[in-house]
Length: 162
Image (cartoon, rainbow, N blue to C red; front, side, top):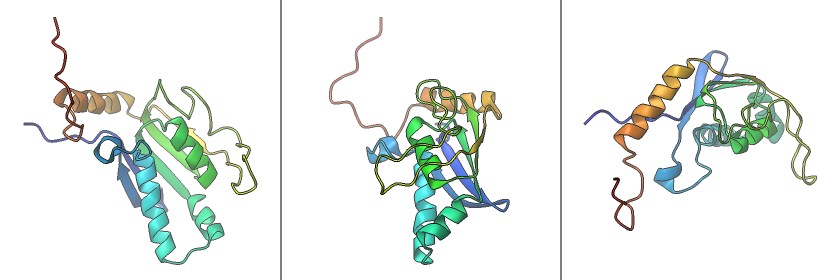
């Protein structure tokens, strides 16, 4: 059996040093918000909370960070990255179904308006895509061809293919 490939990977970098990483755990956790970007952000928020950083200090830290991810952040992740004030994002392949950095919406280009006074508006961030896109697509193909070991077992038998 070939090694398991985790396609949706993400790292957050500050001063040329990886300070957090994440991988897509939506199927494993059965939680649709557990994208690689959210996993990496949660690692940082936990670290910074332990160090007693204030909200403004956390915002300042994010404004100095770059995020690298296999696939274009979805609309949810791009919106969250905008609200957090990430400096820049680099991704491999486009996300033609849910992309929030140009494929479907361009949330990195505009300030989002808060829905209430509790959430600050998002900030624009630089976004560079299609970095090693063919390699990123190959990772996805390899992953889906071998099957997802974290996928839940079907409740009913799979339909036969003719």
